Amino acid sequence: MRITTVFRNLLAVTSMIVSAVELRSSGVVIYVRPRWRKPRCGVCGERVPGYDCKQSRRWRSIPFGRFSVLLAYAPRRVNCPRCGVRTEALPWARHGTRFTKDFDEMVAYLAQITDKTTVTKLMGISWRAVGTVVERVVADKLDPQRLDDLRRIGIDEFSYRKRHRYVTVVADHDTARIVWAKEGKSAETLAAFFEELGPERAAVIEHVTIDMAGSYIKAVTEHVPDAEIVFDRFHVQQLASRAVDEVRRAQWRELKGTEEGKAIKGSRFALLKNPWNLRLSERRRLREVQRTNAPLYRAYLLKETLAKALDYRQPKRARRTLDAWLAWACRSRLEPFVKLSATIREHKESILAYIKHRLTNGLVEGINARTRMIARRAFGFHSAEALISMIQLCNGGIVLAPPLP
Image 1 (cartoon, rainbow, N blue to C red):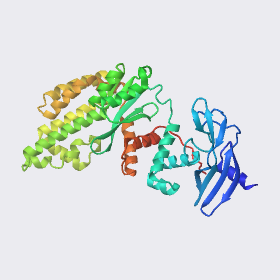
Image 2: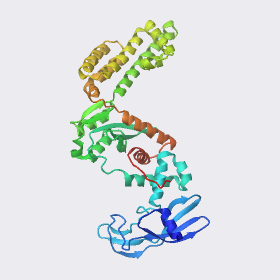
Image 3: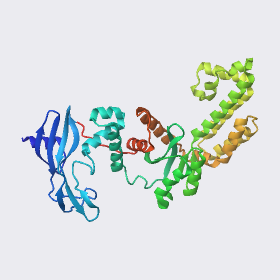
Image 4: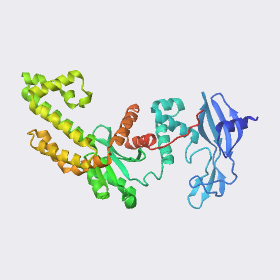
């Protein structure tokens, strides 16, 4: 078997001919050319006439162990009636790059599973080149039809830097994938998503899960008024837990240095945990709070009763229990719960929508947790665009096929 045939089989690129191989101490230079005679436009791929050859160029391919692999070829210029003067399309490289397609796939695959510093060491490229490859692969492989047939979406924000730097993320509940992301968390940021979606596709959306952020509520009601808003139940319970903690701190400030104050000290986790997760010592602490501090124990019961109301699967029973809870919270004489009852009363229908559809923002929160891991292993991102590319690479449903054994 000739050496050119060996390297052609090793590269495994169809529509490519290996004409010569040059072995050097630093690596291998493989001289290649496209199998087709008539050149093709590098943008649209149409067959068009070529009129001259450019200077010889080289493309980085996946190395063979410690030896680098370069593909050498002098590409032709083409005059495409649609795209103008362009460089011809090459079967081994994406247009306008100096890396082969297999090299791009391998870099993006490694970026999905490890940090950029490790990728730079394994592939022998710079940190900036890794980010460029990721953006290029995302632009090439992200599903262009991901915004079609969206019926149930979840919306949340992700903080990627200090000083209130946020990215708004939209996920599809049916495919469990990120479908859109943009810097910011204002109503205008989310409005850009609905404008990109268009009125026809926006009219298909049936349910939107969000937290109680006023900017998101405004954008959803303006652009998809027929969609039903479902507030995340765990966000509602988080507000109740914060109210309990406010009551606990107020009681501690009032009773500090007294016997009743000693019972409050160390009770935070006993008050905030689910009852079935309490340890024996925490149960004792909770009984001590019940015996010595009626306002704080009342706040605890309000929190647990609200969770019970959201556990019901029958909408009528949930509504009846929530109405009773609102009446109790209003006359509880606990300021944090009085404020919370006003908030829940304002958004009661969207909260009860969870009982009917059992939708939460858990999907988006889980994606945000994975995004947090991505940001930490990169030691943070300076630009939202770089983070968005990594979010779409890891959570956008992109399937890569690097040349693995």
